[in-house]
Image: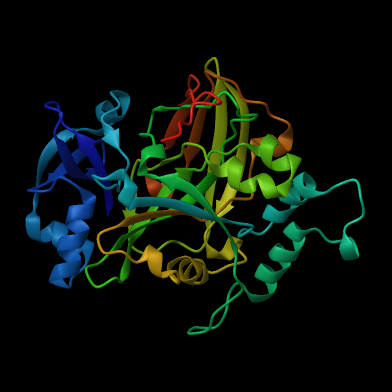
Length: 331
């Protein structure tokens, strides 16, 4: 089952199931979060909750996408209660690009960068036996729900940004139940969108480089994730393919298990607030930046993986203006 959230012709929010070229509308449902909380309280699955409510014929899916009516597949009515985070160096091959970014002219202790150390720890202990705690991954914060754009929309880029680069990856989508228990609804395609030039200046700038807008969706895939996934990411410029590459995901292509990544996120008590939404990016090993691509306003990103339905498409838009220097006021 693949769920979407969308706005109908009257501007009202609805939840739908993708059924070929059409969308079947879930009755009496205004959000995926509402559906999930009802399923948790009813002690049954999300799919059972949808079946219990029933569906009716809905609009043409392609038209919803074309008209910008499709929303992220999970969100919160109060963006401050939606946490966007991620883990890096999780995929086999992901360390190579990062290591090149983080190397310096001076010698590194024992010939190994911090990037390679963390990646090595993941290779050695990222997939522990059931019930065991594995190696801690790199973790980063991107923002709250206010930095999420719709499928099809353009990424605002601040004027201080040095790069506007895609990161094609999978996201885990979660809701915290009334008892503080995290529940995974499923997975979605994601474009984590980062500033790789800033990160390359010094790996301690990683936190700054991640504070950018992001996108995920358009569809939420409910259920287990296949162990081996092959997708394609491309950049279009003036309607022509500027860059295109295959990307791999799923646990067979990762040095951490999903359970280990989830544990090291939700082990923090502040992430277990009832009703909150969490969107977690699982990382990638494929970047156009590694191939020397420099994006610019007007470029379009397309991330496609057949198991997730429609591709995630977004562009690069106008700059988002920050506060001018010296504008913080003393009270």
